[in-house]
Image 1: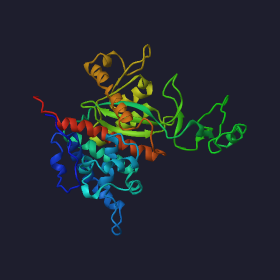
Image 2: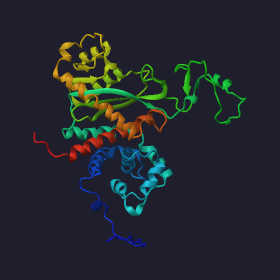
Image 3: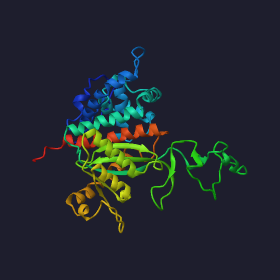
Image 4: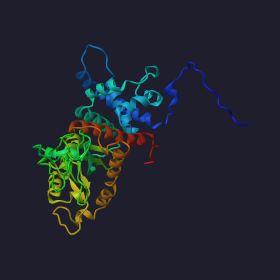
Length: 372
């Protein structure tokens, strides 16, 4: 018999979100890891807030809200607060009572400025990754390095001369919007040493490779451990001042200081097949498992390295870092940043990298135990 819908009158009911969330829901494991990471950051939160005054939004809820925004591809505080009004799953994740409802988006954005800093974001990223090491999911010996670009929140029209000479090129003959005039850059070479973006001065005009278009962007570099593909290091940098091989060496050194011993191998693509990178890896005691450019000979990377089984394994696993970049850009929304300034871009990038690790860790936590 066909069932008939019954309109719901207004009534009061008792709802227990804890009982509604399935035991195998991925957010349960992610919430557990987030709560442990935020517990380790509690002393820092005590320093950021005054002892007296009106209570603000708890910093734990602000940071976990950022994780939700990355996991569910929410692009703005206003949209997040709108969805939080009816999303019981998010309220449960934030440890927020259903009766409390959502926040005002302006209050939420204003309170987030206190904790949305580069320092807090990096500490949160490290607290999450440290839990993967404690669980035995991360390797301290084998890593892969790669970099990509994050498009800045600025248009090419904002990239003008530093001396203001572009103001004379405004085409006043056209009936355009006075606030967004037409400017002709035809025949002019725009360079970072003479030009700068007025919208985001920290961004630079850069192209990823030959034949690629130049964009206002930030450099994004990550170091991935090879056991389960977790991101071990992350940084936003100026790709002109610091090259990707140089960033990889910095991150390998940071891993050596954190682990207490030097990593054994470092895999990378052909962009790292340079004499300087291979030599400095050898000087550090790291075996460079770098993809070779045909007919280029580099001392320290020959058949004794490339014929080993470990080299072939590193070349196969290193491609997973591209999958991490793809997740952060498509799902996390990092293809084009919605913040301006290197510090804010790095802070938001660290939260998205943390969310990427949390997704992988939740899968590892819910996976059946291996027979080995």
